Image (cartoon, rainbow, N blue to C red; front, side, top):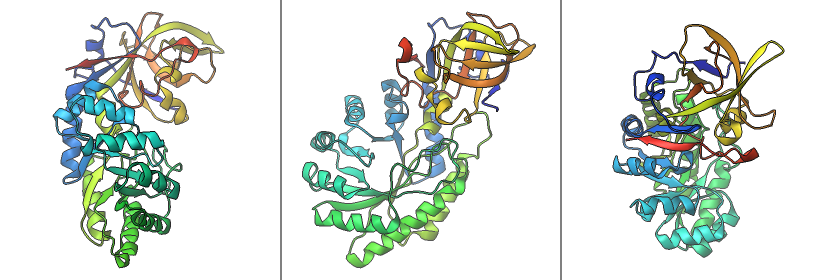
Length: 384
């Protein structure tokens, strides 16, 4: 099982290179974010998607410094809670420009968001429509379509979404409740490395649009979700391939033009971050070398467990020796599941106090982290 690959010290020449990290003296574990890299990632995906509005998924990494940089370079935003909304409005983002995309929301958060100025909400059930009609009367609503499993590296679908026929029925029901049938939303799965994955859901969206036309309902928004990948260890297609495929399927299938938006998260922040950890112990067990770090699955690297250790991260270490040994790499807790990587080649002779660098760590690390076993989340530092 390959769960990480090695980055040698001379393979990165940016501000997150191992040689640059070795100069820093922050207490570990910490997440170092390059805000310039976040800005460049936004520019790349905005160019690739063209006239698709880019709405950063705040849940991916809600650090205020990242949100501020994205706001400054022109990003829009989507939220899944009013805590995220308060973060944004505190930075000067207008509530009326924010999309509340979680299909199921507490009634008091619907009310708070509506009072703040949010007017677009996503749903996928009749009971959610009842809440929206009561606590956000007149709101514009988008129905969440379910999608097929198309092999994303971080499967995330199955909890939300309905079929095309039910989606059309729910949008008609929304109109009878005084809400505006506004759009359709879908998500193809996180870290989607197949640019063709958006076609089936777009075709289903077109079926919903056509079913509503005889009822005088013309939608205004298609939200094509997130799923755009970051560069971990495996090669991914260029973002321009995603943009070109999405434009083709939209032009081919949709019965009339409407506004398009996307909700990338990982693609904007993952590559801009490196998680820096210290080795707290080493051991040889049954012929295998183990490194115990001060960060693990429960306090920063939860996606290693969520993907069954299949998401392959690039790694490096502070010694950058030419002599390598394979290591199993585990976290600090007293829990046998807290193992992140198996058989990763790193410098021979690593000892407590040496550092390990986990790259492409800017997404779903600190925000997923708990304080299990008393080990807290890494501190985030930012390069301007």
